[in-house]
Length: 73
Image (tube, rainbow, N blue to C red; front, side, top):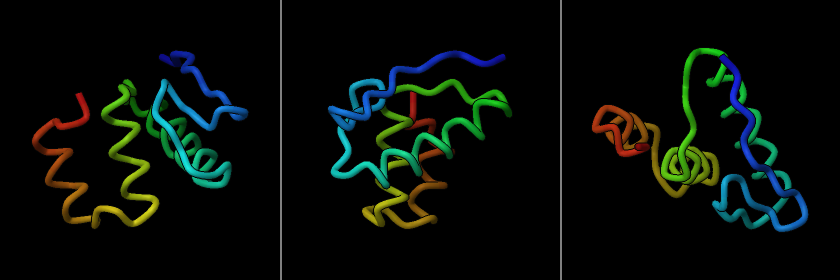
């Protein structure tokens, strides 16, 4: 089931998580939207985790490690 999330393109935030630019915000929003159709329920921690992977702050291996540890909750 789809749940609406708060995206503020002017303040560059998704559920209060800040982004440095609109392109990264939109890329993250697209990734979240795709995963929501598969049952993902976004949290601010999950959004920050996806953002950090998209901007290269964490590697894919780290992303998977955090996901397995449910660090997105």
